[in-house]
Length: 490
Image 1 (spheres, rainbow, N blue to C red):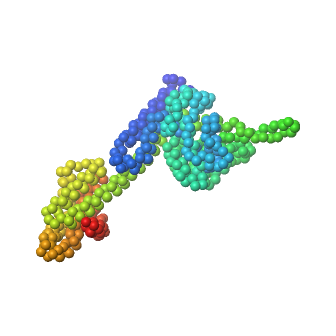
Image 2: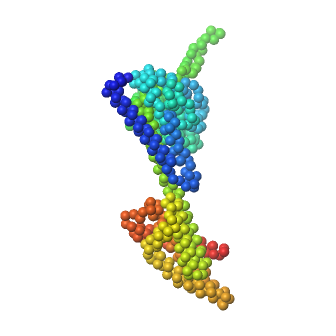
Image 3: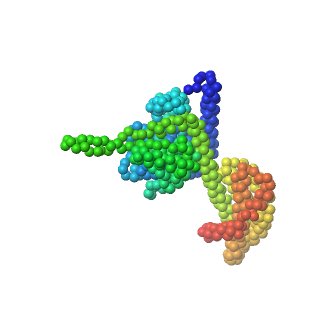
C-alpha cells in the first residue's frame, strides 16, 4: 500500500482524481444527450426503445453498479459458474441444454469480495478496493448496496446459449446485452470450436474487457487440462486474448466418494463438490481495482455514442418521411384547388397560400419555426431561384385559367357542352401547379434539413441542382392520376 505523502501515493491520488473527473464529465455528457434529444411526439413514440436505452445508461452512471455478463454456448456451465461466484444457487441449472431462456441479473460482491481483495497484494486492501469499485453501470433490478463496499453494487448477468436452436431472438438479445455491460465472461469447457471462435469474434466487436473461462477442468486429467489450456492460449486465441485474460475454473465439480454399505461392500458415488472459482474471482477483482470507474465511464460513452447516433439517424428518417408526406399532400391540395377554381386571381392567391402553409409546416417539423412573413419571404426567394419552373407555372396559370374561366362561363349557353374540354384543361393546369408546389416543398425541406442554410454555392445553385434531380414526368403523371381520381369522386 502506498505510503501517504510519497510520490507513488500522490501519483495514485492524482490518477483517482482524474478518473473521477472523467466519470463526472461522462455523466454530464450523457445527461445532456438525454435532455436535448428534441423529439416530436411521433418521434418519441417510434424511438421509445432507443431513448430508454440512453436513460438506462444514464441510470447506470448515477446508480453506481458494475455489470458482468456471462456468454457461451449451451452446456458450458455459464449459470453454474455464476452460482459459484455467488456462493449459492440463484441461477437455474439443469441436465437439459438451454435451461437459461432469458437474460437474468443478480447482485453480487459483498464483504466476502472485500476480504478476498485484502488477501491479494495486487488487488490492494479492502479500503482501497471499496474506493475503486464504487462505479456505475446499469441499474437492473435496483439491487441493494453491497455490504462492506459502501454504495457500490456489482451485478452478474446470465444469458441464453448463443447456439440454441430457434434461439435467434435470444442470441440477438444476448449480443445487445454485451453492448451495455462492463465486463464479459466467455465460458468454454474444452478446446475452442469453430462456432465458439466465431461467437467470440462477434462479442469482441463490443470493445469490452473479456475473460475467457475454461470451465469444467475437473473433468480432465491434469496433463490433458494443461494441454488444452496451452492450445487455447497459444494457438486458438493468440490474436484475440492475452494469457492473462484466460482463467481455469470448475463451477460444479463432481467429487467421487467411497461409501461402505451395510453388507460391507464399498461403492463409489459422485457428489457435487465446492466450486473452484477463486482464481476467477481474483481476476475480476484485480481488473475492477485497476480500471473500475474509468472502464464504466468509457463503456457508457461508447454505448451512448452509438445509441445517440442511431436516434439522430432515425429521427432524420422519420422527419424525412413526414416531410415527403407533407410535400405531396400540399402539391395535391394545390392541384385540386386550382382545378376546381374558375377564377385566375383566386388560383394564384390560393396556390401561394398553400405554399406558405407548406413552408410553415415544414419549418415546425424540422424544429426551425418561421413566422408567416418569414415563410412568405422564403417562398419568394425559392420562386425566384426556381426560374423556368415557376415562370411556366405562372404563364400556364394565366393562360389556362383564363380559358378555363371562359369555358365555365359558357356552360349555360352551350347546355354544358363547354364543360367537356374543361376537365382536361383544368387537370393540365392543376398538375403543373402541383409540380411547382412539389418543387418548392423539396427545396424548403433541403434548406431546413441543412439547418436553414443554402450551402456554399447559395440558393440558386442548390435549387437548380435539386430540380435537375427530380423526375418531373413521373411526378406529373402521379399528380394527374391522383387528381383525376379526386375530381371524378367529387
